[in-house]
Length: 239
Ligand SMILES: NC(=O)c1ccc[n+]([C@@H]2O[C@H](COP(=O)([O-])OP(=O)(O)OC[C@H]3O[C@@H](n4cnc5c(N)ncnc54)[C@H](O)[C@@H]3O)[C@@H](O)[C@H]2O)c1
Image 1: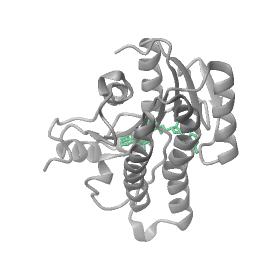
Image 2: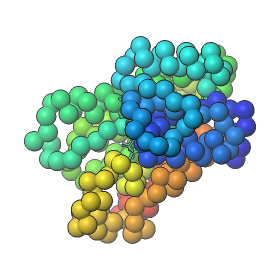
Image 3: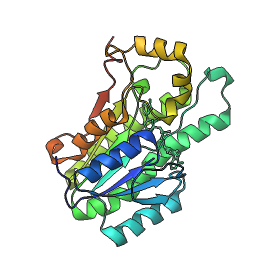
Image 4: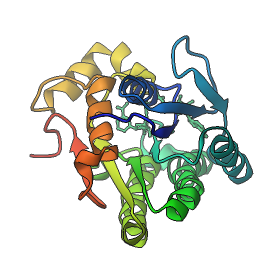
């Protein structure tokens, strides 16, 4: 699986899954540019930009700048995301708006900005990040589930629209993955044990275990895979 010569953009690149995807793509030879709204990590991609994916102008500018510097990206992974915990009845409207804006609008804006160059060139691969919760919602996090189901609908729609022009759009639906997003769960041994007990594999995923399937979908090995939602959850959604 080599990405020699490919230009890749990864959003949420300062986060656990995004950073793992950047490392894996760079290892396989891609030129990687990471986008994130905040860079407070030591490692991460060498080439990075501070971009809020909910900001249409900032997203369009970033993709135009990257295209000028490196050539239009052929691979885009949309991993920027936020979540919240708690019962829906107690959640604020602001949290609903923020989760939908980042997880769904942000994914849409980045897909659209990326596709301009891809459609012109007649090739490209986009991988969006949904969640196991979009497939088996356990209750709670309604905005997150709605946004992540939206990501699946968006992925399948864009896949149909853009496949004829050579642009493949797919998604992964990760299970619980050991990143800053789940720090609160990991700090609580009882909650951690309860969540892990529901996973047939009996443990949470490492970020590299999500990056691998993302790279597969972005690679020529997945040349005939279009509009797929690859569930990577240790078996959580089976029962
Ligand atoms: N960790 C899990 O258990 C899990 C499970 C399923 C799906 N996911 C999804 O995987 C993706 C990556 O999450 P992660 O686990 O690496 O979490 P993370 O919190 O480590 O990383 C998310 C990154 O997105 C960035 N981000 C948030 N809002 C942004 C914005 N408006 N503009 C630009 N960047 C923004 C954050 O700064 C952060 O670096 C997310 O979409 C998340 O919903 C995570």
